[in-house]
Image (cartoon, rainbow, N blue to C red):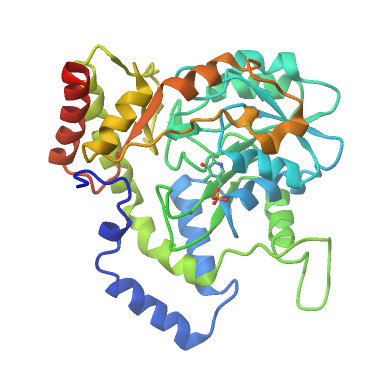
Length: 368
Ligand SMILES: *Cc1c(COP(=O)(O)O)cnc(C)c1O
C-alpha cells in the first residue's frame, strides 16, 4: 500500500532506450577500459564543477581512499572526520592504514568545525570534512584551520554534488574532493562508480597512476597502485546524466523548500538550522521529530517510505570498536540517532507525493 516510495530508480530509468543505444555503440567499439566514454565523462564533470581535473575511479570510497594515498598517507597517520558520517568515509581512511579521529556534528548535520583543532595531534595528516545530507561544512573556517596547521583537506562530497559554500562548490576547496556515482546518489549510474576532482596537477598525475596499477604506459610501472578505474559502461550512463544534473539539483532544492514550509507548521517537527550563504542540495531531506520511532512506524504503516540515517551512531558500531570510542563520546551524533527521520526528496517526487508525506506526519501527531 505504498503511496510514497523512497526509491525512484524505476522512474528515472523508465525509458532506457537512449542509454542502451549509447551502450550498443560502446559494445561495437570494444572500448571497455578507460576509453572514450571515461575521458568524456571526466571532462564534462570537471567542466560542471569548474575544476582543472576529474579522475574517474571505481567508487566514492575509492575516490576518498586514493586521494589520501596520493597524499602519502599510511599506517600511523590520523585523519580527522565527522562521527556521524556514512561508514564509507571511515572505511576509506582505514584502507590506507591511517586511523579516523572523530569530531561531533551540529544540528545542520555537518562536522562541528570548532572541535577540530582540539583533536589535532602530531600524527594528524589530513582533514576529511563530509558534506553530509547535501548540507555543506563551513569551509571558510575549516580551510583557515587547515592552513594554520598545514594540513591537506580531502572533501567527502559524495552526498554534495553541486552544493556550495560562499559561492564555491563542494569538492573544490581542498586539495581533492571525492564524489560517488552510486545508484542512491544525486548523479547516479547503474552500479558503482566514483570521481575525484582537483586543481593540483601533481595530484591529478598521481591519481591517474594509482587507479591503474601505477602504469605509466603499457610496459612501465611508475608507482605501486591498484585497479580502481571508472567502468566505461558506467561512464556512458554518467554522460547521459550529466546534462540533467543541474535540473535534478534544482528540483531537490524546490522539494526541500516545500517540506520546510509545510513541516514548519507542525510543532513536533523541528527543521534543522538553514544557514545562509550556502547552497544545500538535499541528497537527503532530514528533520528532527518528537516520538521519532513511533512516527517512523506510523509512516511505514501508512504508505510513506521514510528512512533513518542512521539509527546506530557510526562511532558506536561494533566494526569500529578498535577506534576506542564509547557511547556518549559524541552527544549530538547520539541525539540525532534518536531524533532524525528522512523523507523522499528526489526529482521524481510530485507535489501530491509531498503533500501525502506531510499529511501522514500531521495525522500522526493529531491522532497517532
Ligand atoms: C555514498 C558515500 C560514500 C561512498 O560512496 P560509494 O560510491 O558507495 O563507495 C562516501 N561517503 C559518503 C558520505 C557517502 O554518502
